[in-house]
Length: 105
Image (cartoon, rainbow, N blue to C red; front, side, top):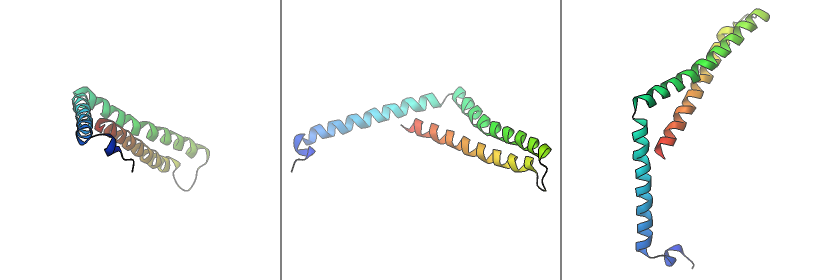
């Protein structure tokens, strides 16, 4: 049997594990220090806000244009407003998840 534990002693494996844990803890502390500022919070609010507003407004504008060109028994504007809002919320959720994962590293 050719095993990694045979190549290194238990002390060396423990030192390596200890160094890895220490390195990850230091990164987490540094990340939290960066994320606790007021500017970070305002920036994140702006990012989330705009990631919802832009698709909602774009879809609504498209809906208004479609209502003018091809009137239907339903409202294109209302339909696309709801679709744009849903897309924007999914987009914002994606950004928040991405930042959350980045902060946990």
